[in-house]
Length: 277
Image (cartoon, one colour):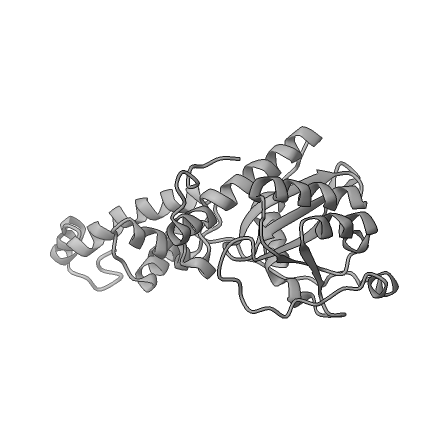
């Protein structure tokens, strides 16, 4: 082999027996931590989020270094793709006296809530997941999973959010242009708690981008390529993800921390920072 590659035998043995540099040893140790962090994220995090997580733990390493180690170890974050939403029901929305969200970005909790419904396919049967999020912290404050898409689905999710948050001041609830959000019973519930309804502009799904992003993340991170065997398993998957999303998953929009930690840091609640629900 040495003759073929024109390398001296002494040079080969010197290379073979040479000890790793301190930098290489540090990279080996760092690779173990990266693998553990990636595993704890359920294989989701790429180099930006892993870098933030390690920095928060006092492990100072650049994103470029993390990315190089991940590439050499074959560690890859989960990639998100986008898809188009279905068209809205125009006439129903016209009769709902909707006011589009024009307020600035919220500065406190219970100022702007957003909600949406997504479709889940399980055992040749459709399931629908309705979710309510506090836009200030991106925290999920109410959700409902059923095999039907009716007003009762979104009313259940909103009722859970109201029970959890107990809003006391006037605020806005923004949604897409789904007929469930224009239903009389749904609007009555909003009015009962002094919540002003708001909906997307026609053809502008980006008006509800936070919910679009949440559903996309949920499907990619928990359902893609996974076989769900029962309704109980599907509900368990949704429930566990909601808790993970609120209390563990880092969010770039709020400084790479969880929504619960963000609320605790900003608002400094007394006792409200405990992981509940």
